Every structure is written in structure tokens, then in C-alpha cells.
Amino acid sequence: MTDVIGAPADVLHTLFHSDQGGHEQVVLCQDRASGLRAVIALHSTALGPALGGTRFYPYASEAEAVADALNLARGMSYKNALAGLDHGGGKAVIIGDPDRIKTEELLLAYGRFVASLGGRYVTACDVGTYVADMDVVARACRWTTGRSPENGGAGDSSVLTAYGVYQGMRASARHLWGDPSLRDRTVGVAGVGKVGRHLVDHLLTEGAHVVVTDVREDVVRDLTDRHPSVVAVADTEALIRVENLDIYAPCALGGALNDESVPVLTARVVCGAANNQLAHPGVEKDLADRGILYAPDYVVNAGGVIQVADELHGFDFERCRAKAAGIHDTTLAIFARAKEDGIPPAAAADRIAEQRMAEARPRS
Image 1 (tube, one colour):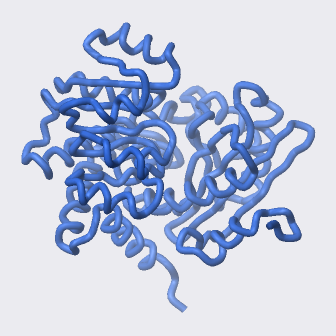
Image 2: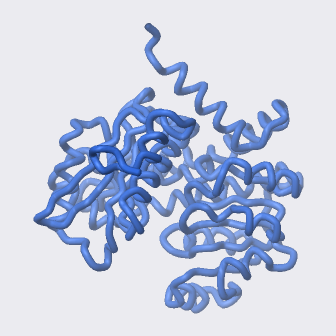
Image 3: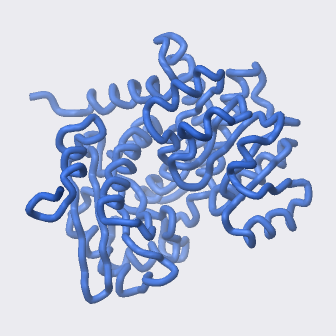
């Protein structure tokens, strides 16, 4: 069933009535000349302008795109709050295959839509968009981060995203095994693209054993050529079943932890860069029941947003790296809060983030 504007009723119910809603604003964007179809979702501006990336993806339907934008924007509110940033949460999705339809005209049209929000939303890179794309968007919109250094930006945010995930892994190891060292730990990385490949570098430098998989064979081949000690397996199904796997790092798209994967997962820790890793809220209890420690994704993958937020104030890499290193202590604090309250880590992280946002809202 659809309503009079053609938006699926279940999407509108999510927006206005469900616990997954509560968004301040959702903008549907269309530019027929360039083929742009996009959704910009602002979940909260309680802490400041909403900040979040632009995902360019061939969604199966417009409803799926809207739902993804809503979920991702909500996650950004929590991520930015726990990262200590003075930003709310927002996210944009562009519908379509970027390899087929991405053009300068389309990106400029998208930039004009972001600019029309007058600074309520600051955009950046995400899946399917890159630094060069943000340089184009910035020509139409000054509220654009993730630009190249040549155009006044900080460059590739995946560097610090990976560093933050690495710090989250160290915190998880300290909490579970009493030692933050990852030396001789076996870590499985699903997705070795922009973030995953940098994460592998950190793990190898510390002396971890690394197993990887990716849907792109050329990406895996490039990685194993550079690092012959890295073991590649056929797919994620094989990776989660690797014997004696200590840590599983989902670094591709969301929903990696579900009713099918959790029962066969061999790792003791899940800590990865992908957004929205839990397919539904009950999955974290399933992880806890199996004795698997889950480091909330939006906590450990905040290094990138720390970097792009800093770009708005004159980027300093060492300042950002120091702030991203704090993800280690934030993750430990969440584990401690979870133990104290008798709740899963993601619920503890939500409580801390919600408290910060609530305290920032003006009182009537």
C-alpha cells in the first residue's frame, strides 16, 4: 500500500511512529536532466548541523533507499554524539549504479540540493562516493567535506576510520583477554576496500594473523600480492567459519550479523567498520548468549567522521588522529557501562549517546 505521494506506508510509519524514526526532516531529491534521484535524511540537529556521508548505491527500490537513509542518519546521530562532536546525524543516498550513472552534472545537481538546506546538513564520502566526487559537489555546496587537500579538504577519511576500528579492537582485546595486544590473534576482515585495506595494514604491523574476503577478486589479489602472509577465503560464509578466529571485522555493507551468521560465527569478538551490522535488535542478545563480545559499529568506525568534522575548522591530521585514538577509551567505557547496567554494549552505547543529545536540546 502507498499513500497519496507514492511513498510506501511502511516507510512513513517508520519515520513518524516507530522507535527507528524520530527524524527531523527527510528530503526527496530529483533532477531529471542528470538522472539524479536522492534521499537526504536528517535525524537530529540537537548537537549541531547534521553530518554524514553520501552513499551511491543501486537500491532495488526507492523504498529500500529511503529506509537505508533513515537508518544511516539515525546511526550518525549516535556516532557523532559518542565521538564527542558538535554535530547531529544525517545521511544521503543517491539511487543508482555509480559506475553507470555518476556524472559531473549529477553530482552538481546533488550539491545544489544539499546547499538548499542552508547548512543543516554537511555531506561527505560514503560507499560509492570518493574524494574526487566531493570536490565536484563542493563546487555547488560549501557544506561539503571529504574533499581533496588541493581543494581545501582533508582527503581520504578511510585512513582514520580504519585507525579507529583498530583502536576498538585493542579495547575489545583488553576487555576480553586482559591485554590490548593483537599479536598472534587471528582476525577475519570481510571487505578490504577503502577502509578494510588500511585496517589490514594496522593488524599486520602489530603481528596479527589476517584472513580476508571481498566480492572483488582484483582487490583481494592486490592485497595478497602486497602482503603474502594474508590468507584469502572464498566468501563471508567461509570467513565466519574459520577455525580459531579471534576477531571478526565486517567492513562492507550492513546486516552482516543476522540469524544465519551468528550461530556459526567462530570469533569471540566482532569489531568492524561496516554501518548497521546488526540485522535486527535481537541479534546482539544472540551474540551475548554465545559469549561473543560486540563492539558497537558506530562507536569504533567514528574515525572518519572525526576527520571530516575537523575539516570544517581547518584540518590537522595529528589532532584528528589523537581524537580517533580516544575510541579505545570510549569503547572500554561502553563495555564497563554495559556490565554495570546488565545490558548489551550497543544498548549501553545508545544510552550514553541519547543522554548527550537530550542534555543538548533546549528546554521549554
